[in-house]
Image 1 (cartoon, rainbow, N blue to C red):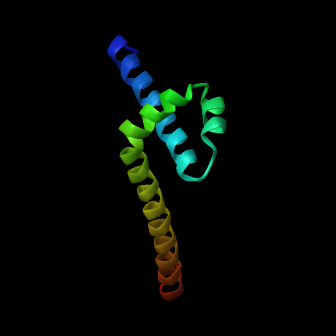
Image 2 (cartoon, rainbow, N blue to C red; image 1 turned 60 degrees about the vertical axis):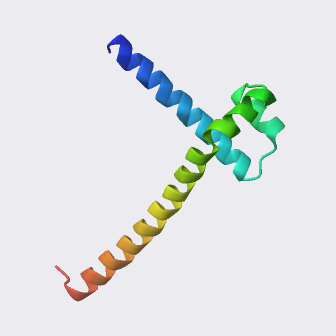
Length: 86
């Protein structure tokens, strides 16, 4: 892996970590518990919330939409198989 690829991979991992922490916050987990889990200071978490909360919210909405679409697809696939069994 090239050096710049390692930097990008590290950045992506860091962003995932931040988004996961913020998602836990919006799910109702206490900040103290989140900070302990991710080994960060509350001040760092406050910065994360300020800078990345919109991204985390969009990810959560996309996950919900993806799950809904999967259910619709499964339902439609089942209906299609009932109409045209092979």
